[in-house]
Image (cartoon, rainbow, N blue to C red; front, side):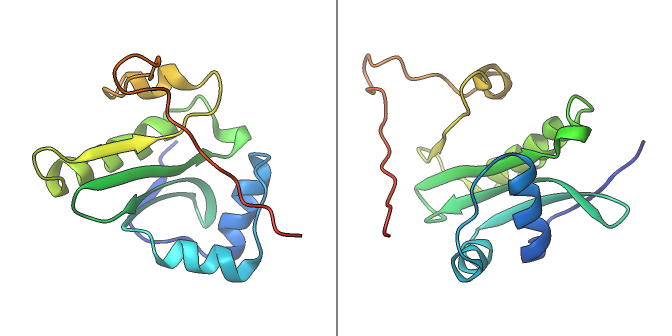
Length: 139
């Protein structure tokens, strides 16, 4: 089956729905809208008009780039869609990044091998450290 691939941001409701299908929490619509709009690059995949996959780049557009929201709807997984998303992301990065730029991502547990095929390395704590993150919760 052939899917439509675009380099445009998804509609807010379609993106929120895809994130929910992946069992990811959604922030308030206002925050999600700003996040969508502030991305450097988007890959969106559609089956007719239904959003079934995404991936995006965030960062400063010069030194640091971060791969975020690589999501494929559960019923469409294992069909090469994630690979297509990453191929478009890698093409963008290879044409945009300067020598010495850093590209990072956080992989879901157990999905690291998906990213190693594109040259990403799992940080084992030696040299670069393990990496860290912080989640903000305001209630």
